[in-house]
Amino acid sequence: MGKITVVAENCTGCKACMMVCTLVHEKAPSYKRSRVKVKKNDEYEEFLPLICRHCEEAPCVDVCPVGALWRDTRGAIVLNSSECTGCRQCVDVCPYGALFIDEELGTAYKCDLCNGEPACIKVCQVAGALRYEIEGGLDGNE
Image (cartoon, rainbow, N blue to C red; front, top):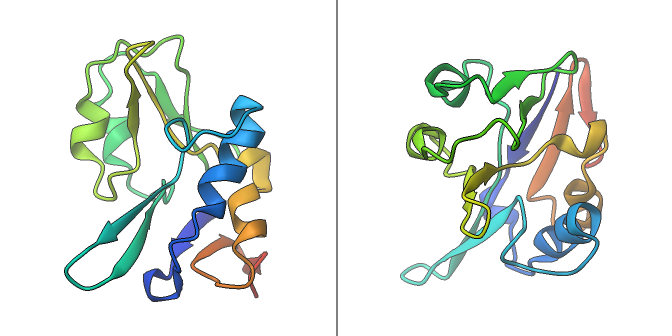
């Protein structure tokens, strides 16, 4: 099973993770459509990447009234946006603020681990704020 780990104190706020995410998924750069968001805490001048951690106990899966969210064979929490009704229940229960609503389509979207090779992890190698953990160790930022 693979999951994302965030080391917030390493985040520089460069947003390279956001840009590569949309390049991979949308084929165009767009901070708005990224499946990872970098939020800034102005009071402390700190940054926090918000990304699906593919929780072992996933409240988003449990709350989805139509079964649009489930765990795949790799352990990733997957969202079928064509089944999503846009009820926002998954957004409300996510402890990491990592599910987002596409306002144009009215459906949720989230990290899908890029088929087991998260692009955001690869561009965050210098800072090490995002790590991809697989059973038996880390993959990417070791």
